[in-house]
Length: 199
Image 1 (cartoon, rainbow, N blue to C red):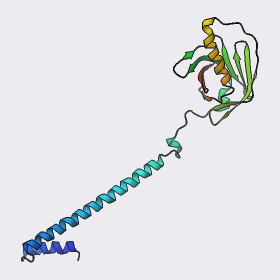
Image 2 (cartoon, helix red, strand yellow; image 1 turned 90 degrees about the vertical axis):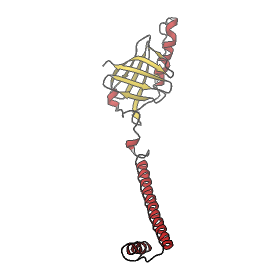
Image 3 (tube, rainbow, N blue to C red; image 1 turned 30 degrees about the horizontal axis):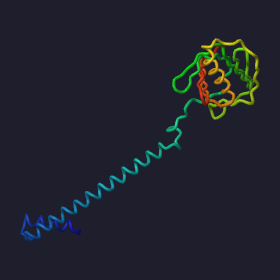
Image 4 (tube, rainbow, N blue to C red; image 1 turned 30 degrees about the vertical axis):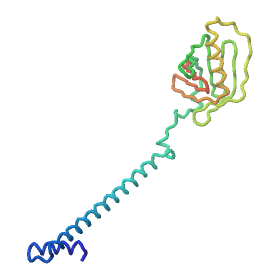
């Protein structure tokens, strides 16, 4: 018989039969009983806290970076075949909110043979391309014509310089590519170029 059971029996017998314990002893017994209950309550709380901690740790582990569901990539994978066709440049964005519209026609063409060509007014840049790391455009050493195009008005030169540099960066920066049926977005280290499909 445990101490708690003995105390309970003594209390029961004192009430129903005869006083087996003196008042002082009864007070001690009641104190012991309360302490036993308190110890059991604290133990129960400790066990519950441990279970909760284990559950939380498990949840955090499941959502850690090793879980691909918890770490989505920045854009959908791109298949080279999605790029095949002709694209016109609509706008160039620069970090900080600055943007420019091409003062002259600028286009980009991808062939199903793996060739990419950029037309910058009267000049062109050509190379071979592939998609790496699911959404990055990789090109070989490009070739470029260096014709003297007609000069632009002074108020268009800054925009053209931005367009020119951004287009050339497509062939050197391994930019990130995002493509839909009608739009193409290419993000280099410095600018983001927005194209629309023409063919």
